[in-house]
Image (cartoon, rainbow, N blue to C red; front, side, top):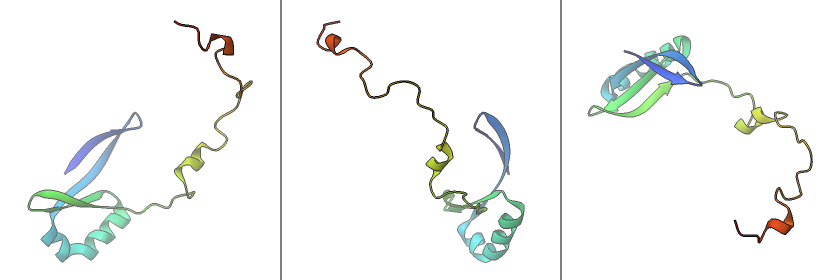
Amino acid sequence: MCILTAFDWSITLVSMKVIAASEFKAKCLALIDDVGTRGGRVVISKRGKPVAELIRYTEVESGYSQETLRNSVSIVGEIESPVVPIADWNRPG
């Protein structure tokens, strides 16, 4: 089965196989090898409901996803003083 998913404004074709837990148990090592080499994903179901997903492992470059934001922000001007003048704080409207 193939599904079409949208992620990050791009369209990617993702190969997805759905199998019963009993079939996964019998073919586990072969499925792991297949996903590891060809990619795609295997959804494991029990009584027709998805319960787990097998996907290829990918190395993470940094320990935290926030690391990708490093050096992406630049401070322009004064950042400590209030945006609205203090005299306007209690003024209605």
